[in-house]
Image (tube, rainbow, N blue to C red):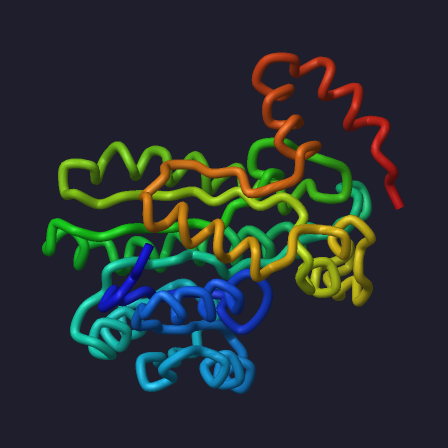
Length: 264
């Protein structure tokens, strides 16, 4: 597995899975374009990458998704072309639906779904023209299974599956691949930054997240899935993978199990 001379654009690259993936792909000799809202943190990630000269930074806010044309042009200009877009940017949630302001639902959908779709559509004509390209999307096990405290987050991730499954069928003729990555619990700051019902960050680490897969290990598995152009991959613990299986074949049993999950 080697990404030498591959140009890969990663959103949500300033922390968590995006940061770990950037470091892993730099070790695989990829040329990287890193995006998120936080330019300072992106610079820190760049400095941790191998051959920082092959890492460029483009600040990007997925919530402001109305026109990404300029950002796409900047990204293409960085190295002259783009091979892979990793749609990794997003935000999680920790609140009951009944306690969640509609403005929070809207914010999560803007960032996780509409921002991702808008950036994909902005880059799509370039991939079509070149008859080559690869869209990678960081979804979630919750993109397959809805669980308590994640109603808006689950909705946004389910929406990504619907859009990108449809897109995959439409762009196959152009030699463009789509890979959906479904993480289970990964040890990152995702729960600390997760939005509560009033829109404020939770500002604490969940036990399950803290005990999740190490981000560096996750990034290696994600890179392998990208390299092999897998259509959909579950990188998760046994229980999370079991949930996907039960959802498909024994949905009533899964519903009973989910109702018993601790809700705080």
